[in-house]
Image 1 (cartoon, rainbow, N blue to C red):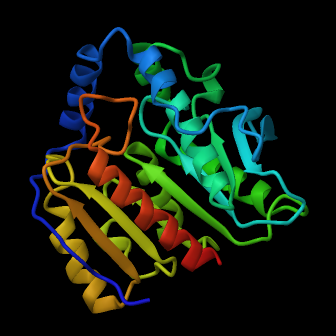
Image 2: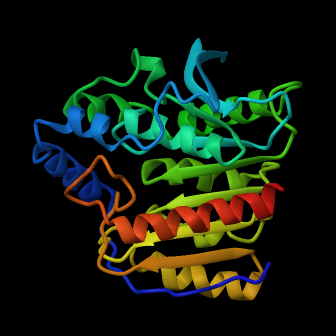
Length: 275
């Protein structure tokens, strides 16, 4: 594939500031957020074209609870791990998993709050609970999910990943430390560290928000390294959008036009790299 498109400069704030901003954002979330999840669903849990279930994967620390969606067929399909953002495995990310299944993927969404009893229903406690998961633990849990997807009879062995915000960081750790991912998609998350870009062999797609004060100066440096090292990366910035612009359950940030375009690019990329 030929890579590199449409970049825009941003401003970097340290991770501590990003965390504080997340807390403030949660405080402003509408009380009707749960009902927004239900109203936004594009693909229902009972869609006859799909098979969905809860699975618990064995880990060194206990059971990693996951949501699984796959096409209703006996054919083996490529697998995709869905790595949720800082509010946990919400109904929105379960619905994203179903949307991927409709596109022909076996999609698995781990709940990274499983170590602490699972994602709480309310945004405030969810943010606090998911925040207890360390970066190394999140990467380790993602590897467990990848191994399970590659196991006999689950997928055809070709595996990709899609990460959102916090979840993009987990993907960064995987692709820079070596995995057999065939493709990885980052939504409004930090790109892999420039210092770690050299070993990356996994093709990347970055869908970035145009108004994201947290990711900024990392992008120009990342682009420079991409050009020099030949890392396969497509980079798109969606002007006048904020983080979670693709989340139709978040009316404050959702941008329908950008979400549609980013999703179409995501599916095209995954089918090209996992096909």
